[in-house]
Amino acid sequence: MKALRRIVSACTQIIGRGGQDPREASTAAYFHGALAHSDKGEFDSAIRAYTEVIALDPDNAKAYNNRGHVHGDKGEFNLAVADLSKAIELEPKNSAFHTNRGQLYSDNDEFDRAIADFNEALRLNPRNALAHYNRGLVYDRKGELDRAITDYTAAIELDPDFAAYFNRGLAYAEKRDHDRAIDDWTKAISLDPKIAKAYNSRGLAFSIKGHYDRAIADFDEAIALDPNLANAYFNRGRAYTGKGEFDRTIADLTKAIALDPNDAAAHLDQALAFLSKGYYDRAIVGLDKSIALDPTIARAYLNRGVAYVEKGELVRAIADFDKAIAVDPAYLTAYFNRAFTYAEKGDIDHATNDLLKVLEIDPSNQEAEYHLRRLSERRSP
Image 1 (cartoon, rainbow, N blue to C red):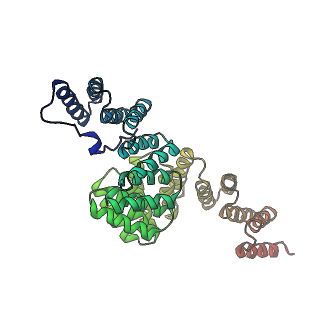
Image 2 (image 1 turned 60 degrees about the vertical axis):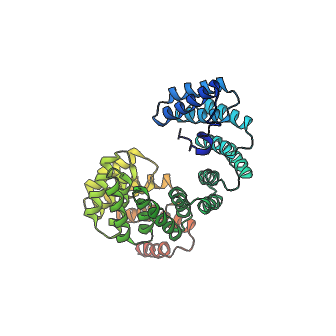
């Protein structure tokens, strides 16, 4: 479970520093000790210290809040929620406590409960930037991107920081608004220029827009900051593919696979680069691996079929086109390739049926109509 963000004002305030009686002094000492243990990752010691605070002062809402925070760090969800709920019972108007419990629910994928807590936090304190940000994360995970963007924007207006810009950029990218995503990631980078994922994300947006050189520059920076970021090598490899530099594609995808051998997409893209260079056997090996890792990628079957066609193994090619269509029954490219392969084998009937299927899916497909006419001419005496 992700750690709760600590609300400093909710975690460190100790009432009364002068003229304390021994009980108050003991409470303060345990409280400060608990904070020190927590900061050092000594979670069990921190929990014991907060428990001592609560024994001495049963109405200490901040101790319950902080002990809940530590239980959250340990992945003890039920204990964490119980403590946060007790803190809220003691101080129902504390916006930070509702924010913290909402974060717990969010981390446990209980999105409706999380939103209810963030709503209450914001009712109590409309300027709670963290509640806006965390509610935005929940809406993002629910696929409600416009509501997520609204909350990220509110968080930015209240407290501009890297995370809100970065995540709003992700939401814009999900909506395919790549220009706004780039603007947000550029702002995030200006706030913290040492975060590799921001360069990687902005590079991907540039790549999608066809700005391959700018994309590669961003991937270079991401890799310089984090040489083990497999996705940056993967994305840079794709950018090199866009430039037609297949040797560099292969080199980057080889590195991506070394870092993450179970990435089916990396094996697929590396195989496509081998295919583009005419290395059909190496392409087939890569496509075999991609399919083994993820048998639901229709493009992998399609391109393995293309490699088999290039090797003259038409029966194996047709079998792969069959599999591509089984995975994606509306995959027009697979129908076209199977039709052309049947035609190459002299099986005009099956080729015709595939082209008719294309027209059934896409009645205005002129390419299918053209090839049907050509097949009809081949039938003519």
